[in-house]
Image (cartoon, rainbow, N blue to C red; front, side):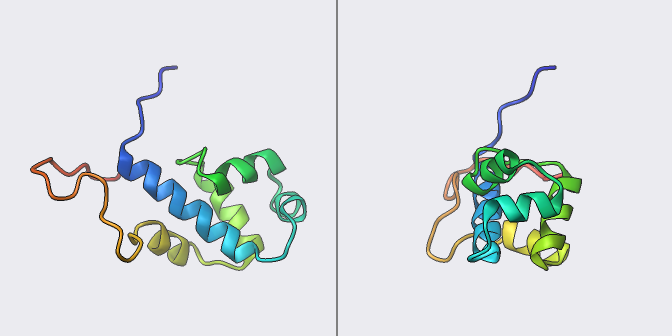
Length: 100
């Protein structure tokens, strides 16, 4: 299977997701969080570091549940640009790609 390259917006969204999960995890260990969510610690590490920008929905749902995050809050945080940071491609006449 051939995967299409991610857009800069998708990469940034994945980085915001990773940052959110790291903050929500706080002092809790990555290993404990991953095991409680029934995902591998390596998967959680890749998501938190932004290396997996588009993780599967059930994976995010399981991690969010363990961390006490609502999926609405996760979705909102993923799609909210960082204050003072201009989104990639902003300012140009590029077409906007819709998320599906």
